[in-house]
Image (cartoon, rainbow, N blue to C red):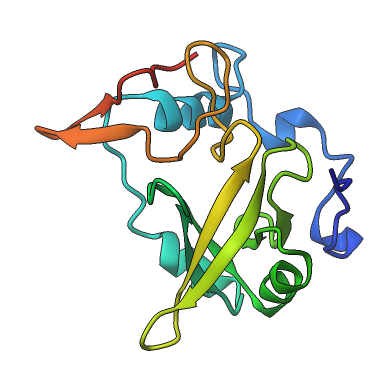
Length: 175
């Protein structure tokens, strides 16, 4: 397992920022953004972020979407983004690497969790504006969220949309 190494300049993030600045406390004393994120990731209410691409565009990041698919089951695991640096590292190491559009830094999948994605094949779409990584998982899963047993979820697509509500797939209820 490779160690996590921040590849963004120190000015890009503040390691010493107090937690209350990162996650402002609400009236209950619980970090408000943390609770909102938990509801987003584990709730049953549909709250799609239709502004995601606008947010990426504002960062001036030159990225393409990457669909990550299990090479054997063909299940879609995650949609991420890659810039030239991430693609070059993926090609060099054979391990899926992305560009984090929220942190503006290289994201080496599995560097901290151990759940790496071994590249089997990389495909380019007809317009050369997106990639498909066919991978084999080396570890528990892809998603940063956990199921009811505390295990990393295999895919980030663990809920289904029916009648306007999100429903957890079998075995994927929240922890």
